[in-house]
Each structure stands twice: as C-alpha cells, then as structure tokens.
Image (tube, rainbow, N blue to C red):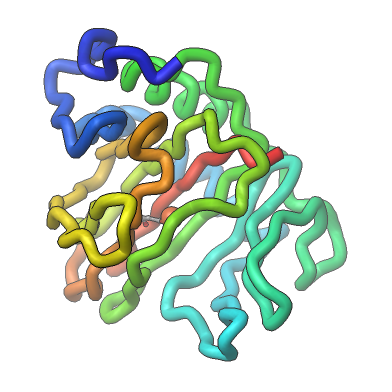
Length: 215
Ligand code: SIN
Ligand code: FE2
C-alpha cells in the first residue's frame, strides 16, 4: 500500500524526505485560519498541558488531543485513551476539516484511505523542543503519520530507523504537511529547540497537528 510514493504525488512542491516520507510544502496553508479556529475551540474543552514523561520530566511542548482517542504520557508510560485525564471527559471530536485534510495529504503522498482516530495537537513556545522519537504506540503501523505545521517555523529532524542515524534538518513552515509511512513509518523524528519568532496567525507559537490511525 505504500507503493511508489512519488508516483502518486499531485502537489508540485512535494519534497521527498526518505523512502515513504514526503514534505508537502504549503499543502495546508489555505485551511490554516480555519484549523487555528478549531484548535481554539478544542482547547476551550481540553486545554493545553505539559505532560510528564515516564522518566518524570515535564515536556517543554504543550499538548492536547481531539478524536476518538488521544495520546498521553504519564509516569506509567505512553498510551492512547478515550478520555482526557485532566477533565475526565472524552476528548473533543475531530473536526471534519481535520479529517478531510489528513486524508487529502495522505492520499497526495501515496497513502489513500487514511482514516485517523487520533489527532495530537502540539504547541511550541520559544525554547520548546521534541527530542528524537518514534511514533510506535499505535495499534496499526500500516498507516502513515500526517503532521501539519502552523505558525512560527521550526527545524524538523527526520532520521532513520536507528536512533543513531543522523537526522536530516528540514525547515517546516506555516502550512507545510509532512507524511511518513511504509518503510519510513518508524523513522526517528523530532523538533529542534524553537527559536523566538512571530507569525501573524499564531503570535509567538508554533502549532502542530499529528494525525494517527491509533486503533
Ligand atoms: C510529533 O512528532 O509528535 C510532532 C512533530 C512536529 O511537531 O512537527
Ligand atoms: Fe512524533
């Protein structure tokens, strides 16, 4: 199902990152104001919070979720759950726009029929970073990860299947969408320490939407 990734690409500004991984430049730019409006509504119900890692550290990135299940880190480990542990209520529903965009981006990258149940929403202030990691808490690894960048630019680190593989450094800007699946599904990735910046639509922040088929 990963097929020939680049053969199916329709976006002219697609940039191959690795086998099965692509950056669709500006793919979400037109939808960005509406996406940010949805983030505001979601976070009224499920506020951003800085999670604790299993090792006991507080993450610098603030997170929340929407969808049938949300990703959580706590002292017990990483896991998906239907309820926001902070409020005890189910995570807010995934807006149709989120679902459609994720499916369109996945299809443009050669992964048609992407139906994510989970959307992790990250918020980066200056100085925040996300160390190299794999997304491997999902029940089904045959589907890709779709990752939407909004606001202040960042340096996306995209490595290989071994933590020691030197990551590529890729600047990701407002509206860029990265998709990785197939042979790259378990690639190590992260975000380098955020430099101070400003974006008209997000102020000092960078937001990221990460869509996963979690179940
Ligand atoms: C993630 O790996 O969950 C987020 C990556 C990003 O913020 O671009
Ligand atoms: Fe990730």
